[in-house]
Length: 85
Image (tube, rainbow, N blue to C red; front, side, top):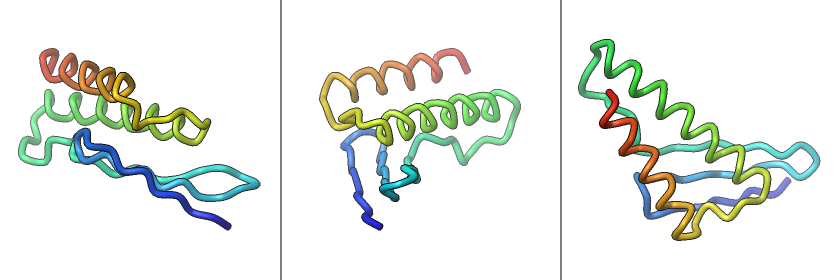
């Protein structure tokens, strides 16, 4: 089984891809708000979970998540969530 780690310069996002027959992986980031626990923080963190899930799924599918335009899209999505919550 091979493992590949992809580090981005965006919100500390690191994806580790595993498996050849059954692709999968893990993602870590600095996206979550660990300081607040109110309802808005919970909604914000749920939105960050969704963004992380999308990034991981796209990386597993072979999308280059280190491309500048891709990372710009992630930054815009996170900023939009921050404004909403």
